[in-house]
Image (cartoon, rainbow, N blue to C red; front, side):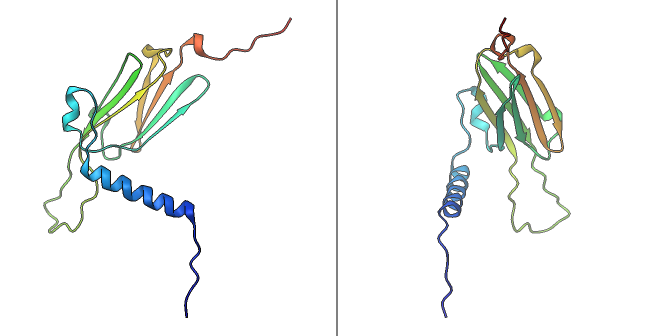
Length: 147
């Protein structure tokens, strides 16, 4: 007896994308155009959103401390970097699998130059680094009253 397998292109494409991501993440470490990029070895997942008053960046970086991050903004580029230490417990014998990435990482984002760089804020809670990048006053939409 044969069972019917339904074709699901969306699921198949997602599975193929994950496989390509896994393949390329394993062979090609993150490279940026700065002097520190040679030591980047992993890339945390990021969500970037635009709200009315600010850009919001959420970086998944569990197992780190707030002191482990360096955040900078220069000429329209927001850069987040840091280092997660390898955590190998010597009291446990014979690791069969190690999947948690460790080492240096870099993420850079091109943002419009019309932001208020002096008011960028960062918080780190429950393994997520949250950045709020306020837009400059002149770029915020404003309501104009008709008289």
